[in-house]
Length: 357
Ligand SMILES: *Cc1c(COP(=O)(O)O)cnc(C)c1O
Image (cartoon, rainbow, N blue to C red; front, side, top):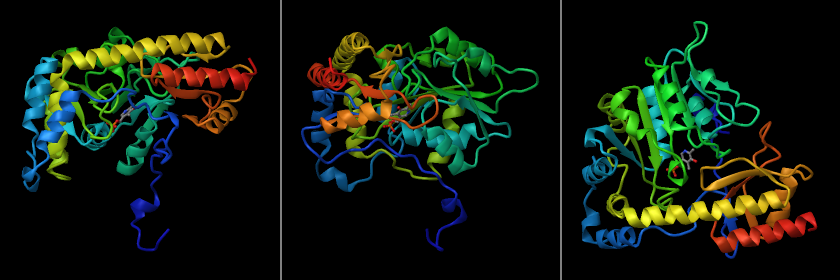
């Protein structure tokens, strides 16, 4: 605390990212990074962009990346906004679109950055409880008895549960709130969900946000994007150009374009993670764990007899790092990122040992 801080800073409760330990030889399954590296074509493009041209600013509009994403998703470039990680895209969306007179609605168990942005931008919000089975109940997000949201945001698949809302359910929420922006945060959709991007041309209130950090294995490059009606995108551009004109550097633009253009690599690397997930879910259930159905590159699991925090600590002693949240209703769960088959094998072996099997 310092007397030099602004009143805003005194009131902030910042997001706490999963730890990035500086140790080697850890089985690191705590921050949902992809176990296999990025497309070799992306790495080659980044190397090719490393040179004297770095003395020049990058393209402030990242037109090459918007064009590549527009081609990939069947949209126009003016329907795409790009940013320095999807966290930055989300931050701009909170300020540009989700801050309204009525409260923003989102699930009580969800990405813990959402309440942090509400604090930063002073946005009134209502947290809507998930159902008993940790699914999102569509009816809870429809206007009811004179009450309607100023805007809505939810991840799909949800984080940290991994549960997927089918596309027709997402569409019911979007169609049922024609006067509110509905932001669907699809950070994990490539691991088994169907994207709502296909609905954009029918719903001017729909904004879909993606990241290159998970399915494209480029968390270190910091690239994310939003897709939606050109009017929504313009709102994001206005905030971005009032904040930082050059959020994406030359290396990020080059690497991201090459990643988007390497569709075969992308499909195959997601398929491998999905196959490993299915095996891990079966192995964990065989050990007595309750595992929520996951369409993401992580699973959310609890053991009926063993405490979640204690299991997390026992794994850590064996150099395996998973994520544990202290929040109500989910403090018995561990969120485990899908690693390589080998890493998941080490995890299952350690759990057998801990459970005395
Ligand atoms: C990881 C994640 C993000 C942010 O990803 P960036 O690395 O900032 O692109 C956004 N939303 C959810 C739900 C996430 O899990």
